[in-house]
Image (tube, rainbow, N blue to C red; front, side):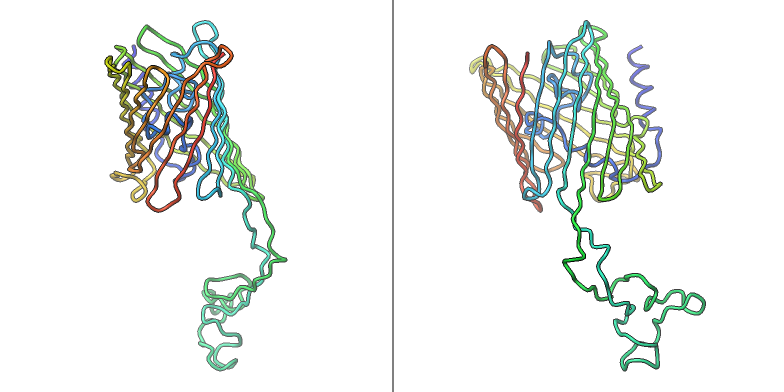
Length: 360
């Protein structure tokens, strides 16, 4: 039964054959500084409230009520990212909610700037008879020269823009997603989970709503080994814009394995995670590996937990180095976790993530 269920979910994931490339990029940032310090290799590790993002089946391993918050800034503070999650046990089920917001800050709207409608030759006048130096082949006419650009009433590359700050307005752009999660153990070592997610995007005067579904599996045959799979946007997440356009976020299959190795001499536990993100939207150049429409990005991470208190983490996210630190303490009788993650990048600014979690 378990094998049939997993096979059916994979078929659903692979079944969507088209969509808008990068339409769901903001939902791939990740959640929780602990997981991100491990390079995002967390699909088979997922054992805390952030499992609602990484693998909803992992929520079945949490107890009681849990909450977490994360904040990060990218590209020198130009983009802020906030994440808030909550979960609680209800009988044999675990329910959760996760909210993500990416704020791109203020964006300059230059649509009202004026320009000199000179055409590609950059010279005013009637072709051949006007200003000296006119190329003589650029005058726009809907009947005789529809491919011309001079005088066509719109800005074309090469034409001079009249820069006037008074005509520039500033507007906002933000992406929001709400995940509602459910998880249930089917046996002592196997659990299922699912997300229903609602997406709202805003880009200046335009906005879009979307709805999607994730499905997760977790198998932990021993305390030291686990396999996980999260099929994101399993039926395609459809976004409908208020200007009549629509786009679809193609499915992503996140598959991972994890190993835990006790180091008794130092009262420590070493956890190693290995993940692969399979996408189906033709990411030939932005992915680590690609073949036709299928691409693969890899994630590798490790966590050394010392005396169940201090954690040291390292990893690789799509070839970029990550690192992090964690601290688990008791505060007013509640378990509290403080985590930091660093993401390096060869071309862009480094990214710093901070998160806090609490059980109650």
